Length: 346
Ligand code: PEP
Ligand code: MN
Image (cartoon, rainbow, N blue to C red):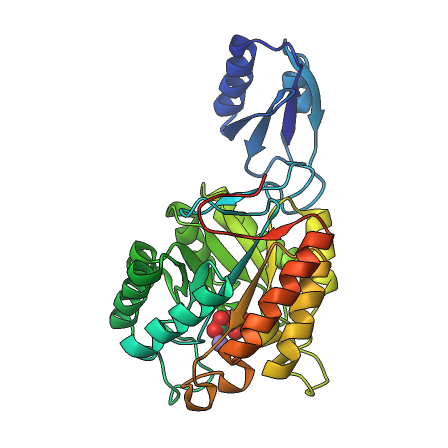
């Protein structure tokens, strides 16, 4: 439930609404806006008697949020959310943030080479998994903490930010110490204890769509994070399972438009996992930016033939460089720009 205050509501009247919601046993979230303040009632509001609040001084109207996801919905907040990053850029505004790097952190020299290559081409965030959710227990599982340390060294050397995956609630604390953005992988989209812990820590969270998850399910997973107090969630479309195995997954381009319609949260695209083939990645990256994606997450490897995971979908640095030139041009046409470290586009 959302309580919209009148434009001239006094701070005392707003405090009165907060007090009554709290007395009813719910949590009140005052959200000052440019025109007026709204107060969100957090919790299962099915049985709340709105008339008590409606009659209070300063209240303009009470809105029942119809969707099962509340705080992530456009009904709750119409302005797009901008997730601020420590380099002065943000995801969800005019900036298109490009996150690039290998699937896994494999060695110190490897991640450093990848970092320099993606930085030279214009990326502002370095990706790389230190904890890897692999389909087979016999595949490379990642370097763990050492991998995080290599990422931190690459950040120190290049100024790039880091996005890296936390695989479980137990390992989240360590990952969030190192990461600028914590990634929740597709296989963990419905790991609710991990989502709740992500909501309790402060780093932005990149939440990838589950292998067979609907868009409302993705939004409900994001709701878990917001409901625990972390508003900085970035959705990620990374392809979904289908009957056709020509591509690794089916890239759901429309999810970008659908998510933007239903939610104020930013959404980025991962055309690498969506297609599984490096030669298809640039075309889908261009399409994603044209469709309004707020950023890209792509795999780039200095030597993809030698990659310990996802080599076939990892671009060569030259391919990535060309892709960056193309997506920059497309971004400009729709009045956006590829993020440049040091300042957010207005
Ligand atoms: C990854 O980003 O390397 C990854 C494992 O992605 P997903 O969770 O989308 O499969
Ligand atoms: Mn991968």
